[in-house]
Image (cartoon, rainbow, N blue to C red; front, side):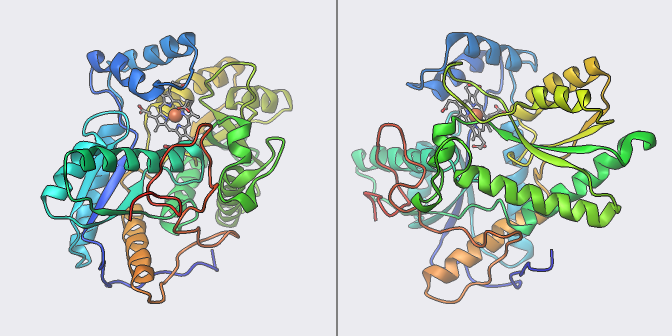
Length: 384
Ligand SMILES: CC1=C(CCC(=O)O)c2cc3nc(cc4[nH]c(cc5[nH]c(cc1n2)c(C)c5CCC(=O)O)c(CCC(=O)O)c4C)C(CCC(=O)O)=C3C
Ligand SMILES: [Fe+2]
């Protein structure tokens, strides 16, 4: 981690007068589950069977996704961090698929007189679902407010933070802790399975700026960024434990029709393959996710963990960053970095790995939608 640079304490958030935490949203009780899934899947052609199955995942947890509670904790952590560092910036929270809905929060922000909003999406990497779709949601919210005659604030989306040390370091600690929990006789031979959300290979290939696009489901910014983070974590874990654990990037939570190719291998198939090849233990490292929401609690802690038990393979699942104070500090860095850039001043950049500071403004063609729609906070935004 020697190439990392850290932003100094202090600094101004001007021209920003608010931060908006923009997330996915999740149900908060059994009656919310079906309407939530309808919101998520509106017009996206997810097979009914998959929806019924995913509904069961939520009902198994009383119809409550942990994601909203985790965002409330992150909000608290952000407010504490900002207050503790003299950053006077109000923080709001809105979601794509459940209350508090983005449009309602933006209306409230406008009524509070917020004119220039920095947006942090709870998705660290480039992809249609994790980046452009949030920009489309912002455009939809601005369009709705324009209809209502509200004077529109300007929104800027903060850059991808997959390689910010405040995102990566807590995960390194998590892997070291999970390794320590494994029975000693299997610990040194343990494999690391870095996991993230599978997406259609066509979406992976076109993720990120056009210059990163590839063919054949082999790359694109989405895969490249995950590999970069995985390598940083694996190298640092090796440095700390003295053991170079073998690692691989695998995928989880596939949906969509079976004939459409998505990124593989699936984490459960990977556990089987590792077991067959004689691996004595595995730590699953959910680098694709910011908190322990349903994709982590069900797909890893329930399903993949049951698969490992069936195989007799010892596994652990390492921690996501959640509301770690280092992550809150990373968000402050991102705000200050972007604010300086917007003021035309040099910005202290924080990043690890090999890819550098991600772009501030998505260019035309970045993570394209299958059917083009207006998206805010990019070069092609119809809004100021
Ligand atoms: C890249 C990515 C992230 C990571 C980045 C980020 O965090 O944004 C993510 C996060 C999440 N995905 C979530 C839930 C769901 N995702 C679905 C469907 C889909 N996700 C996709 C991609 C991603 N998803 C895709 C390509 C689909 C197919 C349909 C479509 O293109 O939309 C479906 C529909 C049913 C199903 O197919 O599983 C659900 C219920 C929750 C909430 C969990 C909770 O409630 O705790 C979270 C945080
Ligand atoms: Fe998802």
